[in-house]
Image (cartoon, rainbow, N blue to C red):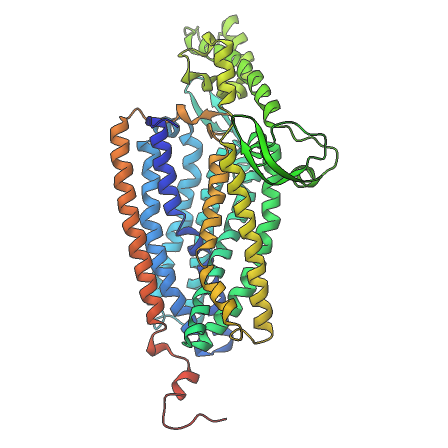
Length: 531
């Protein structure tokens, strides 16, 4: 990939998004775990559950602050690096972002303050309400962000106004209840729950290995194992739903994930292993599981899944139709104003043509990389634009399989500790505790790879089938973007180091002495605790 303005802008947004998404999953999951722990405290009155809530709340606070700091930058990039994107779809994309800020983020940020400073100022129930509000606010934030992102994957409920050259909302209901957005929301949130559960499991396992805060660690592991197992299983189910919707709305992404070069007879096989070769258009040493892909992708034994070669040929047809839509659009915009209430026959014909083929306009814009006027494109340029619709197959192939493999590992990990907690043997197997400690970073690996599959997989589109990425960037100098890219990389790396240092320091320090449970306090007195 050449380091031009498009590549640099993509790289900068990818870098800031990946950094930001290091904080988001833990915020989503820990907020719910805190609410569960405090609910148990309010219901039982046992101080150890209050201690657990405050301890894990400290780690949540560190993560939350840095998550906010890294997320703000992403908002500004839409206007700075992707100005034409903001102009083209701002009427649609801006709505869920504004609602996220007003309804979700402010709710979350307000009650975060009450969570930390309201322990001795609010009643038990009042503080519990604040904690649940933090959890709901975190998840509402994810909902509206993923509604916006889901629309980029499947631009439902919208249409292009040929006069203003802006996408406009036709049905806000279709935007909000876009099936792709809803599937992405529940899948992403469940992944965040798994991330927090494995984090709590790993830190608690470290305490058990060190023989510190044993009661807190055991109870924390019990909650995390139960919550994590349910979440890990739901990730698999909801991931299957996302795959099914990808078959319907993003066929090229699915074919690239599977390195499916040729269209196979239904039901298609699933490639469990192999080495995709994009130049040769084949997958070396492939190991197939018969029928599996057909069942996963279509939920039937008779529906065909098109391969990359077939989809490339279809892209050529879409581009040719897009050229007709582009021609109709140019005629509409070039028409001279007629008398009030009158429309010329040529304009009426052009409008009718655009209404019929306007949904293909984005494919004509793919040609802008090769020719100023798509109507002047040659067959060779059309073929090149069609090839551009194929994303990087090896990257998607391996990212997806590593992500799925880690997901299965999380199911196994949480199942084992759920079983151990039920048998009250959490501290009986040091090797398993060590595995839990070393597993702490793995959810972030899986989540980041999931982001790669979702976002890198829809290239060359910034909005699937509507606006190519190359047409959405601002007219900036490559040097300017490169400098800011390096600056963000340095600042974000420093923030990561700061967060990890603060997290490690808080974990090493452990629960505050003033919040120790009654059982621990009695053990430190000269009077033996009652049997």
